[in-house]
Amino acid sequence: QVQLVESGGGLVQAGGSLRLSCAASRDIFPMTWYRQAPGKQREFVAIITRSGHTNYADSVKGRFTISRDITKNTMYLQMNSLQPEDTAVYYCHAQSVWGQGTQVTVSS
Image (cartoon, rainbow, N blue to C red; front, side, top):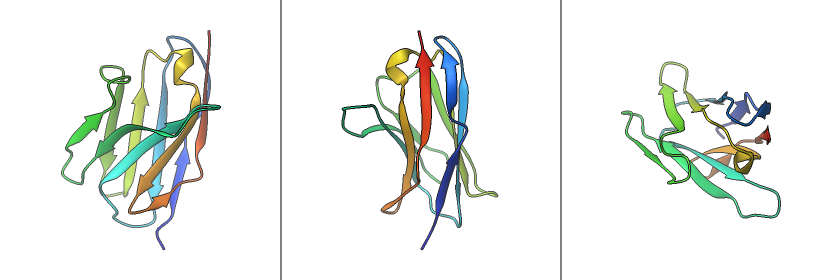
């Protein structure tokens, strides 16, 4: 079974940036980022296909950029202008497989 491993989370001040990575054990595009804030349901953030087509949640458009390196089976999420409401555990997902999640905390 494919494995997904996220990395890159952390604590950042409002207005700051973080870059998340999700490494897959094999080619498994399209790949998707989701996030789950405390007490809330998991929500869609962004998706990228193998060819590079992307789509974003309205809440992150213009601030987050999803990208991928097909040679490394890896997906990235560049998060800029972070706000406290972006605080959540971020998960990558592909073909019914979830990563373990990485915590992103944005302080005001």
